[in-house]
Image (cartoon, rainbow, N blue to C red; front, top):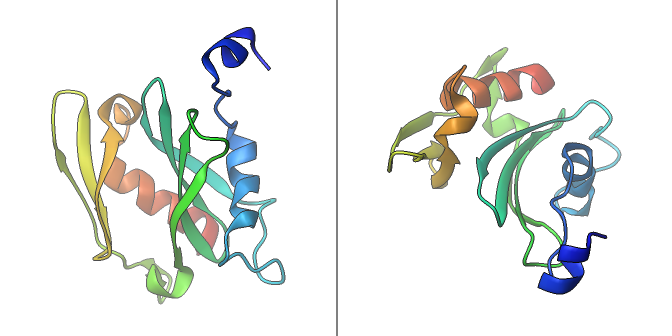
Length: 140
């Protein structure tokens, strides 16, 4: 633990691997069908206090908020593969738009709207395609 963590009462952010492993704490995680060894995580939002991650296993897409002011991350939601893909295609609708100079909003299907994302994390590839690729890489 860092001295700043002790003084400020904060912990460090979870690593990419720790975020992936954290999906096992979800009430929807099924160890008989899901495999985190091949899972992939995509950070979509980052501030000095928070990170938002999407994690794709072979069976579900998870959204995890890691806020260092809390004891551990929180799994905000997850979506089953059947609601994301069909016939070898990513079928869920993903729409991103501007919010400010540094942030945007992304909708991931009809139930998960207005999620903040950091534009700086998506300079090379837009967030829509990055999320589709994350799903495709692990579920198709």
